[in-house]
Amino acid sequence: MAWLLLLLAGLLEVVGVVILNEITRTKRKWLVILLAIAFICSFSTLKLAMNDIPMGTAYAIWSGIGTAGGTLVGMMFYNESTNAKRIFFIALIILSIVGLKLVN
Image (cartoon, rainbow, N blue to C red):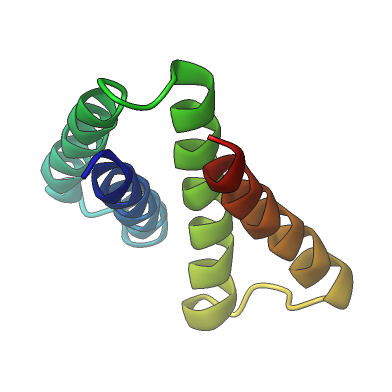
């Protein structure tokens, strides 16, 4: 269950980053409320996951999901660079996340 909570926390982090990007692009101030909700939910879910997963592992996976997820969303929906080197390093982040799960 803790691993599912950690996955959810990472996905909520991606949602927060997308909202942050929308605030930057559109200047809609009301999105700040959604941003706060997304990040509060992300941190709260991360805290719950850390009851069963070591802090270092949980934080590394949470930030990795946020980093890789945010970058992938940027590539798919915001026309960001899809350079092969960029994709390679995102794949390394994902492999590292899987590796941390396997050794824990």
